[in-house]
Image (cartoon, rainbow, N blue to C red; front, side, top):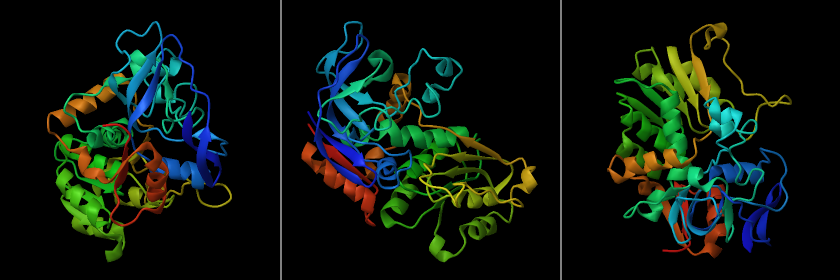
Length: 357
C-alpha cells in the first residue's frame, strides 16, 4: 500500500508498505477524509519528537472500515467512522487512573505518526476498535467530521482544563484551528468575555463566529498590555495557550489573575537555549506563589469522546466546517495539503483532503 511518510527530519515522501495486520479486537480502515495538522509540521520539519524514518504521517481522519477482528462487536466492513487522533489502551493502569491519553508513558495514547504508522496511508490500523472508533453520524459533512478527532477534542479540552465558569473572562492565545475550537469551547462553557489573540483575517472572522468578544492583534503592541488595559489591570480568569513559541508562556502567566488556570494545548516544537526550556516570568508568577495554575493535557481520544463531540456538532452548537478553508479532492493531493499547512498562507485555517465522497 502507498502512504505519505516522514523519511527523516526535514523530508517527506511517498513510500510503499505492507498492509497492516488486523488483531482480534482491532480494525483496518481506509481513509474517507484526512486533515494535515501543525503537529505533523513540528514532527517533520522541527524534529520535535526526535527522528523518525519511513513513518507514515497523519492522525486526523474519517474512515471506512475495511476489516475487523473476530472479537469486534460494534463495527463491520463498510461502516463510516470517526477515528480519534488518540487511541488509548483502555485496560492499562494509566487509563484506570483517569489519564488514558498517557497510556504506556507520556503521550503514549498518541500512536499515529508517533511510534506507529499514521492515517496518511491507503489503509491504517486502529487498536481496540470497539473503544476507539465512533460511527460517523448521517448528515455530518466530511469537512466538519474530520475536525473532531483532534481540533475539537483538543480545543475543547483547553476550555475544560481551564475550569471556565459562567461569566469567566478568558484569553485564547493563538487562533489557528485548535485555538478557534478553544474559543468555541469557552463559549460553550459559559465564558463572558473572550479575548482571541491573532491577526489572520480568516481566523478572526471565525473566532467572532465562535464567540470571541475581543480580537487582540500583536501588531497593535504588546498583547499583555492590551489585555491588561481592557480588564482594568486585573487580567483574566483563564488562559488557553493554543499557539506560539516557548515565550508564549510568559504572556499567558502575565495576563492571568491570581486564582486563574493557564491551560496549555500548544505543541511546543522547541524550547529556549541549550537546556531547551519553556520560560516562566518570575515576577508575573508571583515568585512561584501567585496561585496561577498551569494545566497541560494531550487531546482526549476514544469512542465516547468522539460521540459527544458529534452531539455538539449535530445539534448545531458550532460548525467546525467553517475552519476548512482549503478542500482538496483525492488521496494524491495529500502532499500538497501538508505542504500548505507547513507554509501557512494568510487565507489558511485548515486544509482538508476528501478521499471518498
